[in-house]
Amino acid sequence: MGMKHGRVSPNLDQHMADEMNCKGNYYCSRLRAACDFRIVDLPSDELVAWIVAQGLPFDSLYFYGAERPIYISYGPQHKHDIWTFTEKGTPTRKGLKAWRDRPTSSKG
Image (cartoon, rainbow, N blue to C red):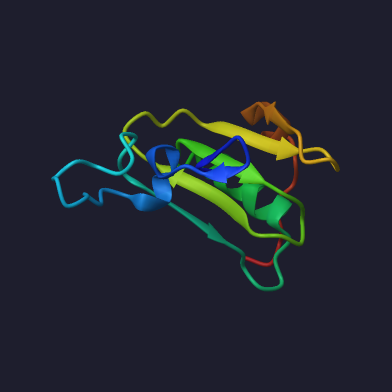
């Protein structure tokens, strides 16, 4: 999420979208956009399972826990990289299959 060595790194952060600096260069060469969000009363693991089940395009998705927001980025690559984190914050790449087998909520 734009972090390099524990610091914010705008050149890696798709939150910057297609914003340009005063010299006309993109802040982030990855382009497109990213956001962090959570849906009230819907556990984030169910949201991730729904996104995967729908086959929605995305570059990266970071899952921090059922009661925390997710990070999702969208761009031309559509890598479908899903990352989860250990209790110590170590990122772990999860494949789509791990989420496809999870049931989605019956709330809608």
